[in-house]
Length: 380
Image (cartoon, rainbow, N blue to C red; front, top):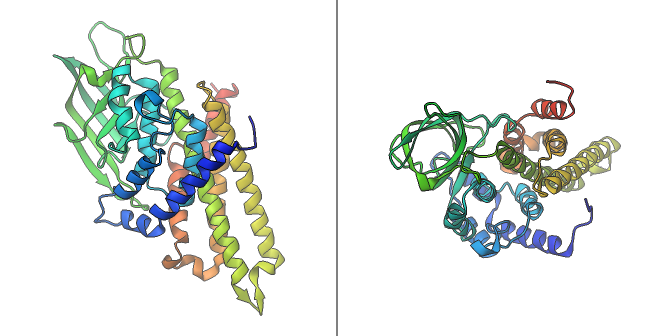
């Protein structure tokens, strides 16, 4: 792994930062979290499509940039700085999943729309509280011309505002072994029953019950073999989502550190800036060290995952470090802001809410530690 960014990666970072600074101010974050908002940042997604971000990791034959997962991680890191709406992330993760799990015809159908900013999408292919658990909660039974889906998705992200959802299901066919498939479902289809849940961050999370939802054969992928998806491929998609999320968390933590440094440099107490006091400097230094460690762990997890093989060890380490670094940055940031840190107008709470949400999503540090334990053979 090279620790020094290439010029292309630096240019990508600068471009993403410029677009996000203009199109994703904290006012947009507040607006999308409001109870009356539809949660769809149309202008932001159009701008990201125009500069090629949405098609960054999409193959050139489908109208994308043909870059890799690591370059996508660079955008996630910049997105974390400005609290980019989760529908952007879930659409990008959908593109990654399609590239790995879908058939050539399905890639042609969906990836060009992702790259062009014409499609909002999400993925429901693993346990939202433990990404290592890829056991489907949906069952697929054969029907004329397709399949009927039944089951429950407890915490489905952005399904209420997505045009298409990629989900996994286990087949139930008499006298045949159980297989793993992925299906592309329109949430507006009959039998898709969704209830939006209340969340602290205002994200669109739903409980979904599928009752005889019909999907045609051309909307189902049985893998390259035609006998079901390879579970390693699904596991890789889940690990890629966690690795990208870690990059997002690093960006968010870095933004909190920058805001805190600026505040303590300007805020005066006893006739001098509070940043000149040694106690404050020690807290800032500890924040910086924690974030730098998380940054390296996140970059390593994306780099290894981008090679196309399972990188459970690197991903688990990154998730543990990033969870703690982001949470610590927000807690210490509030402490150094003093009473102002708890005033909603300062916007600091927006990062605190995102830190808590991302800490839980895909697995807490304790759950990530079990991934590492299993990888090292310490538990069965």
